[in-house]
Image 1 (cartoon, rainbow, N blue to C red):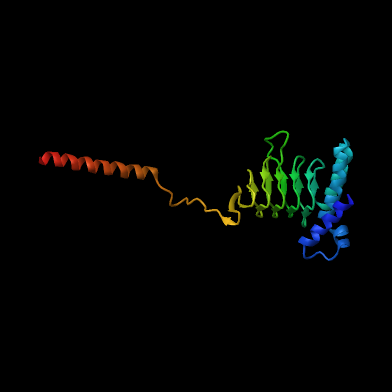
Image 2 (cartoon, rainbow, N blue to C red; image 1 turned 180 degrees about the horizontal axis):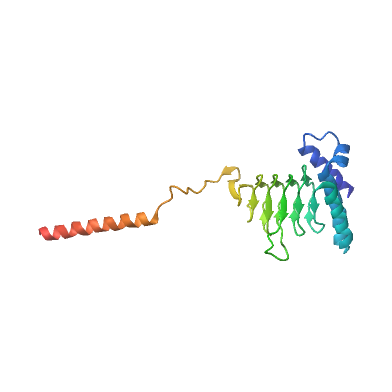
Length: 211
């Protein structure tokens, strides 16, 4: 556990230029406190002491404004920056080196049973106010923009934006959006085809009549 705490502090120091010292991070950063309390709660949850686990997690939510269900599975070096309003559901799985900003929800839609919450890959960034809802995977090295609502799987190395979220960049290359204005009109295309056919038939009939 102490090794995990040292890793968490080092991860915050690396990502947050405002962090001055390890002591400041340990005692004053709500994200670090929430993760520290989550790890204790998760220990009791996995050892069949759910009441004690929930008691710790609710105390953490009251102190930090960050609600992490003790049943969630969280990897190494998670950084929750600012953090107020973050909610992480029971069956959420989070990989290593993930960065989460304030107001993020990793939740469910209410339509699923069993695995109800998302699986977040390694080195993923989830920006402020984003909602990731459902039992699908967000691939490694992906970026979710502020305020995005993600309702389906995100491929690795992707950037998603919008409501509902859509992929706008993949492997560092912009994804060409669908042109909603200049798409072909199938009705107009069929009319043109029929007009050409009529013209050809009229030409053939005219040639026969001249003979």
